[in-house]
Length: 286
Length: 243
Image (cartoon, rainbow over all chains, first blue to last red; front, side, top):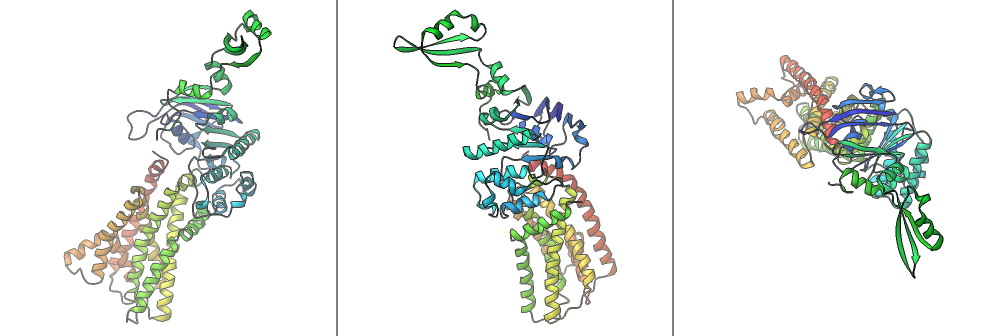
């Protein structure tokens, strides 16, 4: 769907490139996570992919054609879900959506989408009266107005309660099941783990790792299982290497002769991997 | 230009909902009030001055303020990740402005025609108002590009009024009479605009060369401004996207 080759970008007033030779591919029908601390270039990469920033070096291909060769028809195919609210506050939700939808040839069912995200009852309220969570859900509906084949989502569940976050995540999953492709930028590792087929970690303008969340956890974890068991009226924990576990006599002795309290493989969490790979913290600098 | 009509309708709706059009209407009613309160029965001589203030300052204000709201609410970002071209966007804003100016023109003219005496070439007036509105709308774009806050926008508008508008009005009402200063005023686009509007009046003393100068000045400077505005749009958008 997208092929990015040796992408470089420098902002006009900067001396140093913000993007320093990025390569990645996004397959049709996958959810691709773009992760990293603030300032490493993920927003810049997104802005280049949605053609807001144009003076880049390197090549980007969308459906096999150079992105620079696309005109406004490119926007007929994509949907962009911003993190910040992007609505006319003195217009109702319905007026906002109607206005934006008329700009596209393909049109999704607005009322159905509003029902799915729980905003249908409030569709005739001015957006100024909406809560932060309602605006986030409206942003998501706006991104789907044109039935896009490619969706760019920036923190789609930020500021949502668990119930509404679940609704949005289900919709993203349904969108993917329907053949849609998603680029997801988020700091919420739970979302990444639940949704992404593959993730790219960015640090200092480069992609430092691309893989599935599961593989990353295995790759960056210790291949060890911690076994906590009852021993002499108390408890004890021992670690066993996963490689060669079936020949580990001590492991089988513990399992056979003691009551097991907990048993955990020691793969890293994505949070740990994020910090390990990007060298950054989990929070926005600004 | 397939999205022009959608953008234009949206523009007019928002001018209404954000009470910008109401402010423009209020100004029109103020001019009607002024006409009512004057003892003059034949308003032919002062009518162009009312339109001058509307087509110049209001055109600039409408663009500046509507783009300010779009920046504040991040809707510019949303518009430009949809299949809208900058040509469609700029055209919709200018046409929206022209419609607002026409609303004022119709209101003032109807009042003058019904309750006072007026003798102007209305068709020529319409054409000149459109020309003036286009030029000053483009100034409004420049103002929006180069201001970051409402205070800066307001400062820009006040500067425009002091530098470009007030001297021309002062000359028109006979306060500026010094010959060399009157000649310097020909450098201002607002002088060109007022000459054109005055030329439509039956009492006009505007010479033919002055009309040609006015038309030429506004068309040429609008063309030059348009080039800058189209070029600057990419930079403006990139800035708006958070650079």
